[in-house]
Amino acid sequence: MLKIIAIITIIAITAIITIIPILRIIPSNKIMTIIIIIRIIAYITLITVIRSITIIKIIRIIAMSTIITTIEIITIMMIFTITKILGIVVIAVIIAIKTIMMKVAPREDGNIATIVYRIVYNHS
Image 1 (tube, one colour):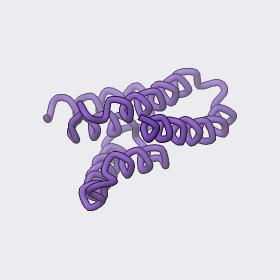
Image 2 (tube, helix red, strand yellow):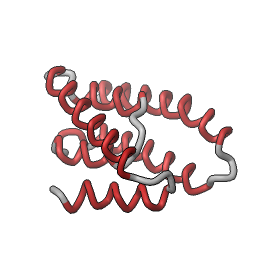
Image 3 (spheres, helix red, strand yellow):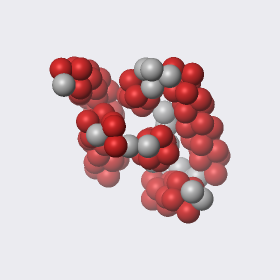
Image 4 (cartoon, one colour):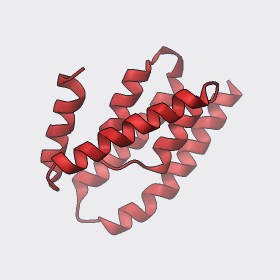
């Protein structure tokens, strides 16, 4: 139980450190800010319900964002502390998915969201 609380605290701190500069950069883009907040909540939730979640679901949640962040790497490494090799494989897969998405998806947020949704949900 203490381990879970510690993990959540670390992620929350990392999330706050990561979100502050991002919020300063994009004060006009409210949609992007909301997406970032939702992502951070998703990671914290992910850690708390770690036992009942599958690797595929983890990949799906993380693949929803276009650029891999430190929070994602920390989250994955925490999930796969027992099997670090598997964690590295998952990171590699996610980076591959994101690279493909960055080439396929136009720069607009709406289009990226649509393409991500198609890739993640329709081809599983």
